[in-house]
Amino acid sequence: MSTRARHPSVFEPTTLAFAIVFAVVGTIIGLELLTRIGISANTSIIAAITAIAVSRIPVALFSQFRDLQRQNLLQTVISAATFGGANGMLLPMGLLWLTGRIDLVPIMLLGALAGLVIDATLLYRLFDTKLFPATGLWPAGVATAECMIAGDQGGKRARLLGVGALAGVVGYPLGIPMDVVGVCWIGNIWALFMFGLGLLVRGYSGPVLQVDVNELFVPHGFMIGAGFVAIVQIAGEIRRSHKSGGPDRRVGGALFRAFSAFTIAAAIMAVLAGLMTEMSAPMFIGFVLFAAVAALVSELIVGIAAMHSGWFPAFATALIFLLIGMALGFPPLPLAFLIGFAASTGPAFADMGYDLKAGWILRGKGKDPDLEIAGRREQYAAELLGFGVAAIAVYFFHQSYFEADLFPPWDRVAATTIAAGASPSLAKALILWAIPGALIQWLGGPNRQLGVLFATGLLIFNPVAGWTAMVALAIRFYLTRRFGERAENPMYILAGGFIAGSAVTSFASATLKLK
Image 1: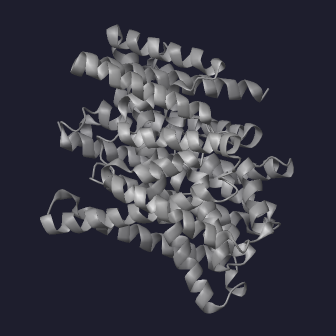
Image 2 (image 1 turned 30 degrees about the horizontal axis):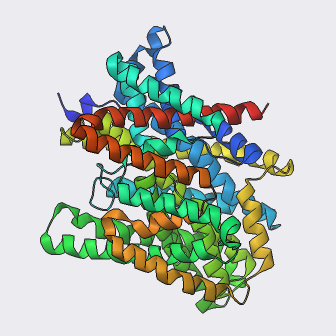
Image 3 (image 1 turned 90 degrees about the horizontal axis):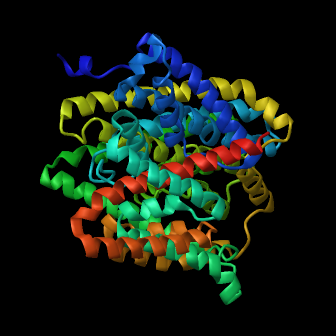
């Protein structure tokens, strides 16, 4: 039997029909949560639970979804539609609406959709390379796969996962982010230590030092410096792969093609929006190239952070490029398109990474290369299907949200920042704080990503999560020293439960607030 025959297709009639229906529902849920509550759910896990629920309906039509590969495809479509529709498309469109250019909102939708497709295509080509290895953490992907395996197999594994999920549920109302515990039990200790340290510095710099690091642009400068060094390190890895003739030689080509695609998409978007009348010819060319750089670098930085920590500063990273664009002197309307285009890329890149990680685990962790390639290809098709359904839904629904003054909170922040303009001290502050960010990233090397993770923590105000990370790492250190390798597998499954339980409770809590 061929590999293609062994792996189901997302375009099988029954799978396709259910995928489209659930993608529409997922898109609406994503729009509601982002505009009314201001949050984004952990879509991979929520979509997995939906797929498991469908497989348990006692009707013959649903029996085919007991197959884990079909569940994974259904989960991937739902996840892509939910996250892509809300974070990838509606959010950039809302920014254009708030700037007063309602006539240009459809063009922003086209630009955002192009960004999402390029985003997904790049990760499809980079997943399971040294840059984004399948063996990387991708925490939500681990939790998603553990949920689906437990639902299929039951037994001790399911009980252990259930205990972890219960802890995640109980921890939520107590204010304990158990998803952070889960991440810290399976990720790189040094990277997550720096992430936790960044959270604590951001949380206590005000009360202890009477200094607001955010107002001083410290987190933004750190991320610029760390991000720059991370890109240099990526370039170094690509050069070494080419010299050694290893399997990762495709990385450089994939990045170049992605940059070219982003450049073409940005140019078409800018021409359709009439941005040539806003800038001189040299500035217009510079804008197109900078937009392409912003989109590519944003997704790489967000992807690195998501893979190592499960948290990704997508909107903060997009805001950084807005600040740089302001410092470079781009006019307000091009800035709105710039930030919308950049914001459309990173979140979907991270979310797809979780989906591919879950699929990789479910397919046997690469033991059957042909099956893995076929399965990943089908997941890529599922992502594109989810984006397509979401784009249609967002096109028809966006006006009703915006006319009701329902916008993602980040849109108001970005619109206010653009209206305020650049301050004289902005560029100086970004350059000043980029230096220590670059130094930390260089010292940690490309495998630990210390600078990027520390900057990620600085960009998030959540001191409780910082303390939780430190305690979780201490417990992990004790258990692994005390019990050795025997502790690793139970901790791994429990961690998946922590993340899943916390994600489901967060989603349920936000959904109840909509009523």
